[in-house]
Length: 513
Image 1 (spheres, helix red, strand yellow):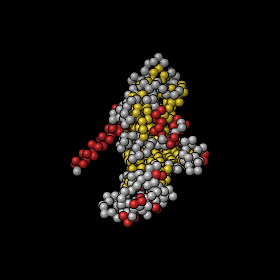
Image 2 (spheres, helix red, strand yellow; image 1 turned 45 degrees about the vertical axis):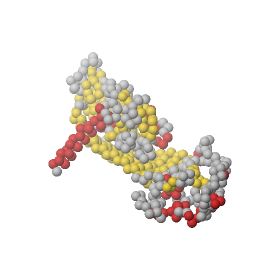
Image 3 (cartoon, rainbow, N blue to C red; image 1 turned 90 degrees about the vertical axis):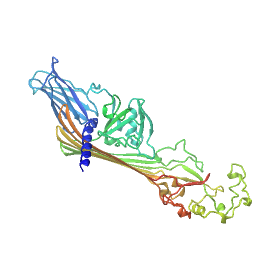
Image 4 (cartoon, rainbow, N blue to C red; image 1 turned 120 degrees about the horizontal axis):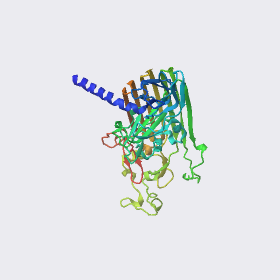
């Protein structure tokens, strides 16, 4: 029992020490120096920042050299005010704090009454003089305005200088992962964070699904001079932040539709038996919305979002060769003819005369298989054309709560679930030849909880709990196994098997996990 308590205490201590490092990645800070008109330092000046959207405020006092630091600020638009007895108040508006940014805002106080003020409207400086890293921020307006096929935000990482997309997640991994090599680094050397919590998929070290564009506030890509908390990933760091609620109720709904009836037939489409180009039958429907606002004004805020995706597509045709009715009667004359053998006549050896086989010699197990195959066309060679099923259904939901207990104490919680579903082709078509194409149910869940207390300009306590989970099931619709065919054989996978007829057809082969 004592050992268990020691392990729990050690685990909690590690969580406490490490969470304060990663929390800063989802926020920013403002620092600077306050002087008078002669450039003399102004100690004891009160510096207050106010976030415009939520009325969140934070106040510090300049030190003996006139310097101040406001750490762990939520991102967004701000108003900064500096006041000191005997001087006019300095007010600067138009500040927009971005994720993982540390802008320097210097203030110059002018002699006068405190009730008087000098107002400056200016954005934060573009040059970060505090951080040694090189990073680029992609804001929500850019994410929504740029054309994005599939609305996968991870594709926009390529906008950062030196980022080259080298691939995507494997079919057996979670959907949405994208591989990047940044500044010559390895494609698996990128650290992903969402709301300050790790967002790498342990299975392939790529990213877990990001929120859909309408639910993402912004993200940054750091390509050099990375801080120590990304030491496990030397290539680059991607820090993303979900949207939060504000003092104003706001939301949106969206619908993106791609339909074959709206598009011309592709010039690369295959030609059908009627001589006309075949349409791919694409129907992609992506819909959803977001909504957020205050629960307690200036204190407690909520945000939620949902996106659904439905894809229907006419799949490409596959070709297989199955036994014809004549073959099942023992007549292989047509199969041995030049028409079925590239102009070459094939003759069966004795004792099979005239390319005929006594049906009594056929394997009962083989006949049990052929009885389950689709009915062949009049093609004498047994050629049959069939299609798989490419239908896809996916959805993603995001929910977030932000609670400002005081100007120096804040908490938040965020949960996101992403589901991608494809039914096994055999379940949809009922064609035994489709059993080599399994379906898949993929689910990714992400939970982040945070508590931050600011004791001063250089003392911050941040506690973070993060939970990520992926569940991937590649399933096959049950069909039969060797026992069902009359074969005395132990099947370690009931109702499934793998069967391949050379130059003919295949059954099974899709993995199930």
